[in-house]
Length: 278
Image 1 (tube, helix red, strand yellow):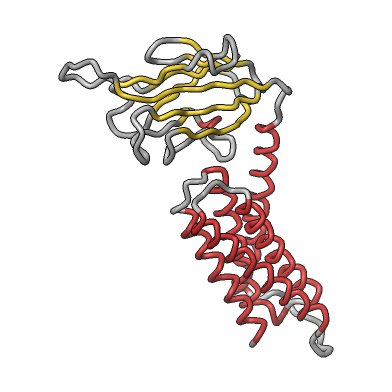
Image 2: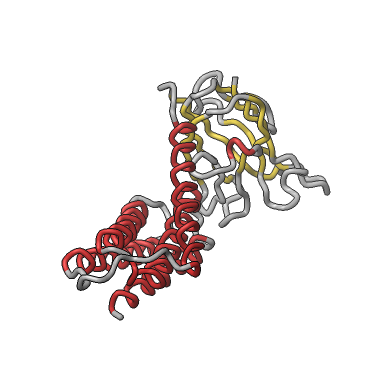
C-alpha cells in the first residue's frame, strides 16, 4: 500500500507540473517541463498498476528515474528568470518527486518481497503503460539530441538589439516599428529603418535583446516564424513582461525568416522585420 501511495504522489506531481507549465512564460523550460511531467505521470501509473509484479531492481530503477526527473526540474528552475512564486512551486514539486522517488527506490531495493513463483507474462492491462513509458523516454531522448545539435555554435558571438514601439506621427493611422539599435549591435549585423533586417552566418550565437519603447506588461512580444526556430530553447520567442528582455540562441538553420510581434494588429501595423541566416 505504501508503494502504491508513493506512485500516486508522483502522478499528482506530474499532473501539476504539466498544468503549471501552461502558466509559465519561460519558454526555454516549457517543453522540458511537459516531458518531465508526463514522465512522472506515466512512470507513476505504471508503478501503481504493475509495481507488485516487478522485480525489486526494475521497480527501484523506475523510482530512481522519477527521482532524477524531480532533481532535474528543481535544478532547472533554480536558474530560471520566472517570477519567484512560480519558481518556488516548480522547485518544491521537483524536490517532492526527488524525495518520493528516492524513498521508493530505497524501499524496493532494501526490502525485496519474499520469494515467489516465476513471473508469468505481463498482464495485458499494463502493456499500454509499458509502451507509453518507452515512447515518452524515446521522444525525450530525440528532443534532447535535436536541441544539442541545433544549439551547437561556431564560436562567433553576435549582439543584436531591437526596439519595438509606436510611431508618434499624429495621423489617424497607427504605425509601428521594429528598429535596429545599430550602435548597440555588432557592426554589420543589423540594418534597416522601421523594419529591421538582421544578417548573421549559420551557427553564429546570437545574443538578442528586445526593448519595448512603449513599456507596459506584454504590450508587445517577439517571435521568429519557421519551424526551425519554433522549439524551446532554440526559439527566441519573448512575451516582454519587462521593458527589455534578452535571449541567446544559435542560428542553426539557414534562410530568411520573418521576425514579428504576434500581438493582434501589430504585424500589420509595421512591427516586423527579417532574420537572414547566410
